[in-house]
Figure (cartoon, rainbow, N blue to C red):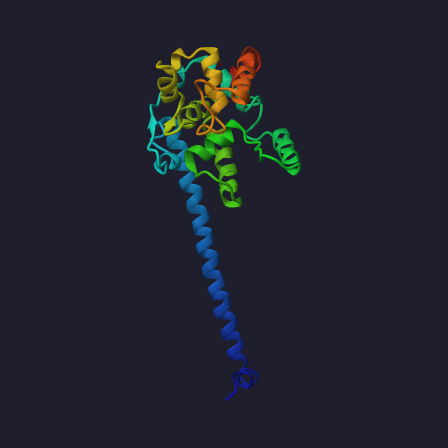
Length: 245
């Protein structure tokens, strides 16, 4: 018998099919809910653990074809000039925002509409969330996860810990991660001994560490480093109290 005719003669067939569809959708929805709840629980656990434990490695380090070197140091053993330089070069509103700088995001969007090199509006908090928990590159999923982790670290870590982790996981050169390894590589000294100019040179290379020279920098990188060095005193007076309070 034709299935359609059977359906007309027996309404229970349609009801059975409907229940079957609802059952499949219910199962899919249940799985999605469990995945989301599992991710939330895992991410919160990660952030809580890393509030107290040094980050052992990141995905970027693991998949770096050049290998990687990183020496974790507490923020108390990092030159204050390095903190000033990071804020001056990467995120002047670090102490006043809650993870996102709306003005920087808007400005980056407008510049990108005009063409040329794509610029981001990421704060140090966003960069720390990405570098610590996620992978490099774009995509809506990664951006959404970055935003979620940014909210978490702002709420659970606070500014001092965010800066400490940032300065320990940020790439400072080919196969080099963290300012301690960077200071040893470029200036043969610990991060605690970095001068204002040396810290500014490292900060100038943060956005593109594989392409920007720290020692012997010329052109834009050198000029950018000089601007950062000049701004460090202003930053110290206005912004870094949230890190060294």
